[in-house]
Image (cartoon, rainbow, N blue to C red):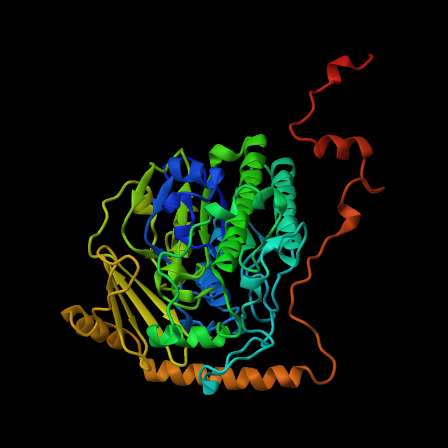
Length: 513
């Protein structure tokens, strides 16, 4: 970035936030004043995609810039290996404090991946328990797969598992921002703040629920389809989430979307608190703010809910970058993905030379006003539950191609067909040529075998680790209370003065001589 000192970085992630549900991307109802400000004054990437539309594999790619088959981070129960460099490693070399408050869904004993500290535990488990089994085809694994309870039980709740979590995430993040300003103001920070909302269940606080009226909630753009009207992959999603177990009415759909919109406004409010904290500390103008999500949510489109698909409601995510000192406001149409986050954060911090090649690219030239490339492309790879073989996405220009060996190919022109209702794969020449590109880029049979072997090994190990004594991998936040507030190894006066921001005026000249 064009400045003499390294900027601070505040990287905010939401969970399951579909781009199309934000006013920034054209939604006329959802209220997000803080995100709207960042978008108005920053760069909005109009076509950003989840590389792998599920929590853990998408977030691993955010950290390391690599597609799942290159890392083994296939699904929500696949280990993220410690030997893979992340943006946190690179930014530490550049002199940054690196910190995470919130969700990342790292699986395995390494719960830092280059971060100096985590301020909270994770909201989801870090072990092998959520391993899918492709041998079961589309059969459900009831104890952890999605079902329709979230859709049928939306409403007002003043506290939930997730609200408790995100309240703490925001509190801990603001507290650490104060610490940076008070105790190490000369060193730049790269803080990731990762919320679990607006991920279902669609229960929201009255303060945010009341921002919307039931009758104003929009219905899906694509009405409910019967199972046999859906494409092959969507049929599996319909089955694995047990979408046929209950009758879902129009009122249910409106209520679930109501809760989702309310929780988007809740996340926006938390973002506003972080921005206000930076402003109060005098750090805002020196901080690059990056906002994105791991994947979207169908929200009833086609009769589907949740994610695990490369169709737009699930795969299209927001990406906004704000920094008035170096970012010229604009909207970028060029396709990008979550794999681009890692090299971009490194470039912002002055670490352009990466330890290994990655699947993403730095977006810094686009942030600085560079010309868009009409031939730019972005890739996705999905190897988790809901599919029974590797699934790939290629987005180039207006075209999106989706391929899985077990399913008919899909090709959509998103300019002419934004709701992806006209599959051109069998009739347009690009259907054949794009499939050839996918098959040339990935050794799909070998990847398929690797995933199967990994699943079987992890399923066995999870059962084994339930036998005998167990030491969990779930992150335990360590807080040394003996160094907080006032203790007897500190000067009371010095501690009070040092912990105050802004610093109190010097009163030495008022001392009685």
